[in-house]
Image (tube, rainbow, N blue to C red; front, side, top):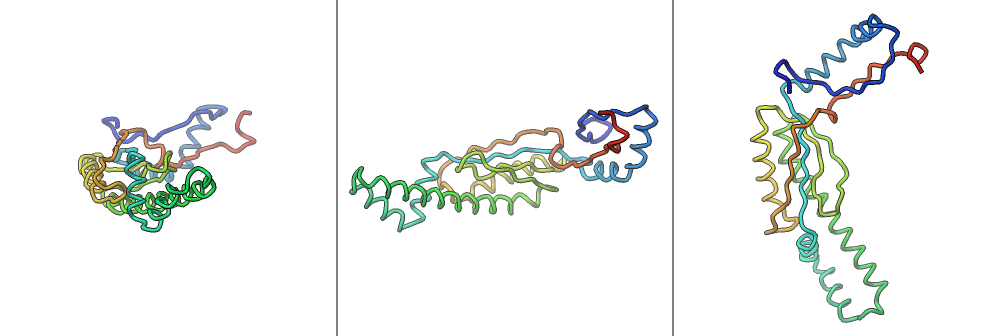
Length: 191
């Protein structure tokens, strides 16, 4: 954040005939530009990643399902010839972990929304990553937001008694919360 105010992320590549054409483009879109500035004024973007170790997450999923635990015990006695049944069991366990991850994600978002202006969910990179998101947070509320993250993770039952890996990335440029396209008409722009 600059001392003068918020900075909107920008991509360059516009070819204009002259500075007057750029000035006219800005004048035509001043309302949209101001709205984007007001949206991010006094805010920062923080990336949040929360994940758990795989083994405790799998154990917690099995503990939550008596039927899968019984199936696992039976498969251990069946031997290697039950490879198709073992693969099917693995698929059901993966589906359960995914449902539990989704529930954990919803719980985290419910706890964090009051501390953020907006958020953008991103696809998890692992099945034990319960949250991968970008948050728009007031500059002065960063400490409270980070405290809320820690408090929210302690309530999760995704992998009880296991310490989560919490990453807060930023502040970073506010790319996920600004959508501003000031392009010239195709016939006016250079190729």
